[in-house]
Length: 256
Ligand code: ADE
Image (cartoon, rainbow, N blue to C red; front, side, top):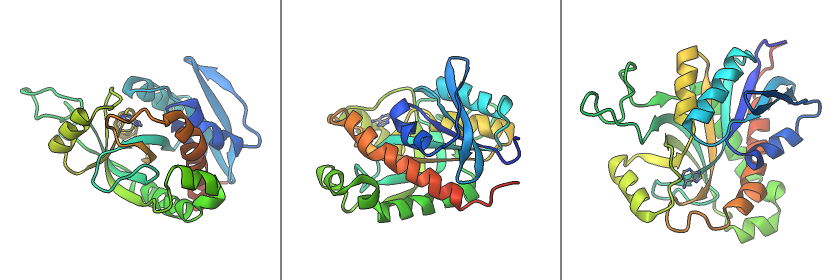
């Protein structure tokens, strides 16, 4: 059955693991070197998959989800580096727009414009974005329940917030202050940087599939961007992803 089927993507296995743990009847299918996990989640028909890191890996995976698995909406979850003022480690950003910060076909086209599309920013589906940001607020309100008090204290998450705005994507892990300062100068309204979202948004636009993305901030995309990254992903971001995806799907009326 593919009616109303939802695709759930993350770039790395630890980002998706807690989502898979919520799927009681999932099974693994391997296609193009990726493991796809069809199953059910909160009464919805879903396919979860780890895309791999970067725009090409994500675009290939999104295309397979749409063409082979017939997903009719696609959600991306995982971590991102915080860029915007006040976007701190442990905050959550729901994208309303996504763009490729490393796309530059100037002088043939304006900087960042995607040739053939006449635009540089892709818009997230407002209904799914609304569900994800509401799910993010609910999740952060129950952060101690999801993470335990120790993780909240260790990672300093007591005042974590949800933001909505621009997420930028590029094939580079941003790990120096010089680079993140340059991105802030170039794209002052960018809240967070990651490596997949805008590519998936472009595939979804091509195929007419609604897309939304939500990212937990794992670092400030500066000289300390690598510190405790793996521990943060497994102890915080993966649990947040599962809680947010679950709450988002519970808010949706499943197709029968
Ligand atoms: N994902 C998480 N942190 C990131 C960073 N600093 N740069 C790019 N992608 C990221």
